[in-house]
Image 1 (cartoon, one colour):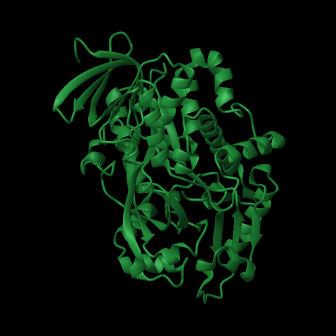
Image 2 (spheres, helix red, strand yellow):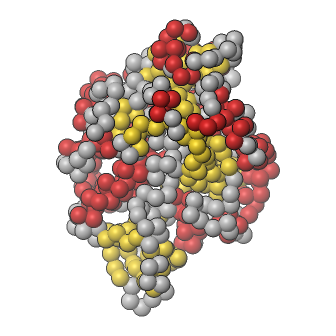
Image 3 (spheres, rainbow, N blue to C red):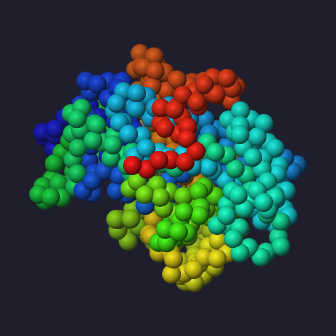
Length: 500
């Protein structure tokens, strides 16, 4: 590409929560390494990590019904819920370490305690929720979960949802007070501010145009400086592609075998935001319902208390939408540009398989504001159209790949890392639980990409994340101790947060 590229040890593409987390981990583990960050937008945390572009739920499977499935024999499988809960505990531990090190000074700027609830209607759903509660509440990770079908209790827990409810359908809810609301945009900005103080070079308004393998096995990155309309070339031994929806096109440019037969399908989201303070005050929880038939898992409807800019807000959604863009600030050609000879069959197979999803998205795109308010009224019977505004949330690109279990063109709904065999480059793809499990995912990147350093780093990793390599579900007393200490450090011990 160039005769004289600028060299560094690590290049991070995209200034979102994933790059912020990886950069922060690396600065603790190898402070002498030179790290450069390239971000197309003017600031950190402006795309998927931005507080208005995601649900802000600390995903620990406390309320999300799609992490617990009913098996053929009627029992409830909680293995995925345990896995996601344990992954979120790693994030809590790392954030707690950063507070103790004064890298994060005021945890309440990004994390708040908030009850997490599941709410269902109809006999079959109530039966499922009761079984789910029985399976989870005996597990140490979900200790403190409560269940009720009693109207008086529901009025106490969710007065706004119960007000004016005339439906005679059975209704049930579970509640756990140890849930959190996380402002991933604020967290991302805090971490990048600190990285800048540690001599990490942050390049905003710099768009990565190409990535090629150099003769010596390192990677050359072609970057467009958008401010000065200049092309630059940079070189590093390790590159991390953390560009949200923009990661797939960049991964394809690397040409690594692992990038083949992977496609992406973009899904956008909308939220309703309450503009009436007295309505906002009547609700204090994140309440997750059940996804409609044919809906993707990230379209589970939920009514959320959020803390954004130190102010309590109330959001409902998401409503799914479709645009061919891979990023909110992307191009309408993104989807078409991602179709390559090596993934076209995978993409076509997914199109045939996912007819119900396509139908669902078309229905969602055609919803009028009145229809959206009708859906909201399933949660808040007294909701008025004029009390709610619409916010366009972020783009999520669902991974499509060939799998043994699902066959050709299987739509993946999780978060996954794709890395080269030699570990010199890694990309993060996918959607939920995403940001909540950033620490787990970035530790996975370190294991895959720096195997030669993992032994020497292990003690430091355990200092930052005490349960690293340990199953918390199998060590309940250790979990209890760690959960209590991180709650204290992060200011999560109080029921009602104090806003300053």
